[in-house]
Image 1: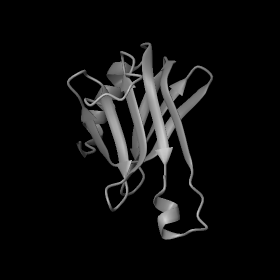
Image 2: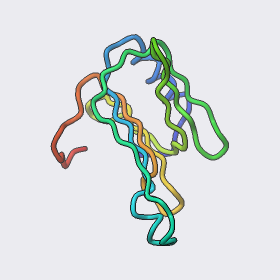
Image 3: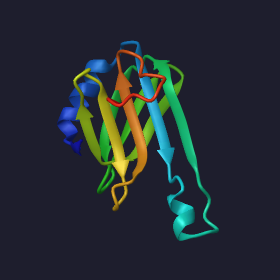
Length: 123
């Protein structure tokens, strides 16, 4: 992955609009929080292979990171805190947000084909 290049990400978001795509969205502070503060809550959300068709999407800078929103017929999907991206060999848009130590905090991935269900060393 590399640091987000807003124009490249926006172009790929545009290319995937109005298509049936699969979304992977994940947020977590994982076990990180409780390692540093035993009273901290561990939080997270995970959805994989949600099939959506978004009308349009937008990436905006939030000062040091980015937010991506996808406008659906009946609402929105969005992720905030994204810092890095990759368009992989399967032509999937993979975005992630990492903290200062490089730990994953948020991921938003969009693909025209489903993501694997099993642990895949290539994903």
